Picture 1 (cartoon, rainbow, N blue to C red):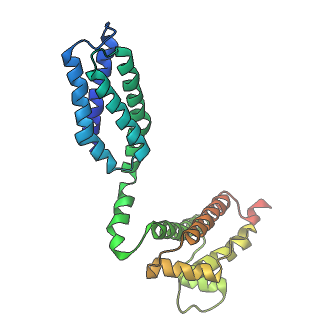
Picture 2 (cartoon, rainbow, N blue to C red):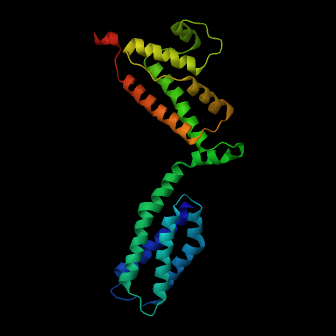
Length: 244
């Protein structure tokens, strides 16, 4: 799609450049009108349908459609002033630069995520599940990396020693509890508390394919953002022993 859009945009620029060079006040040549007609036909038959399938907002496309429609109709009139066509082509140019290309670039950057969401739709997993899963996995990865940075071992043997208990089913909940104790001991910082309800929904989402409600997803994301900020602050701190 990128090549077709860029090629179409080059046509817009060429016509606009042609207008800028003309000294006539009206569109006087048939060739010039035919270029506008061709641009319009290309828009209606290829580019607009293509963009309708993208993430471009309908309102943006409707604005462009109206502009192309106006230029096409106006160019067919007996007297068409260059200044009018120039004004509308300038608006089209601005929309392509400030909106169309920006949105398409952003969409392209997120294509793997979008493809993944679409590919598991048959499983009933939605965007709330993806967002919550990403946030929950971030919690685990962030704890693991900061623990390594601070030389806090979170394997089963060391977690059992920190918590002073035997663990039959070793999980992230145990690692988080051990990490929280070590952070309190080393930095006198209290980590956010993982409630029983939070731990249960974590298991349901990550291991049972539960689609959280929007408010549940928002709560998980909010908690994760707060946790990441706390971990960032901890990563910059020195242990209490080093401060004396």
